[in-house]
Length: 311
Image (cartoon, rainbow, N blue to C red):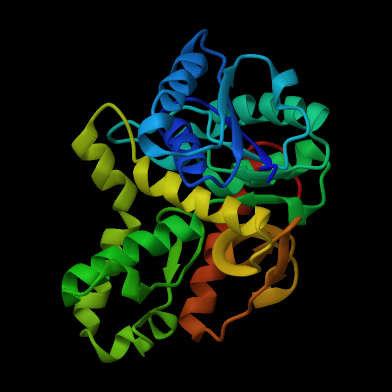
């Protein structure tokens, strides 16, 4: 069976690990591209030399030439500056906007029918920028953030309860970072709302640790940021799109109406399938959660304004 083609832009830790997961799970054939001479080539060759051991039949190639990415079905954009200790995601705004703008222009040129999955920080603003620069329908430009925040939250809950992480389905909405919105009443462990299993103070501590999840890892690593969980989250989204799973995944998508939001990229549950976003899932939120979600959207719009990026 012919496998779909996916391009991963950026051969750093997030990009390379995303590419590795895609080929080892046999989800797609991958093109890994980076502006650094030899970087993508070397990592792709190293991965292919693992094929006899791992047994995967998909292929990956490394390149510096966007021509090799032509006709990709999904393009995952991971390239950009990574956070350093003491930096916020917003600190990366201007430089990464320049990087993402250039990448999107090349991607659109060679893969005009692709779905874009943006991972570069600050995530929500970079996704909005990619949408504007691409000219694609908003359904085909999606940001990876909510799934990552939800995964972190789910792990912390599993630690608190001593259960398997896979048994926890956490729901985290809003902007990626300090403006994330934890929704405990929709977060379940084996089908049971977590509010019935953990005290409010414990849930509040988990909420705060999830907000600080990326910074906690940056603090430990000192010279880099998270890449295992972000790559796993991106791959889950790519698989849902390519296999038309219509799976509900917390994603940064364009919201115009649901949750009372008007014309903004923000993290909400969305069904992902062939062609990108097929539906936004509207959950019932408390008044406080709605207020927090609108505040998160407002923060995204403020940063978009700094880039003169009207939505």
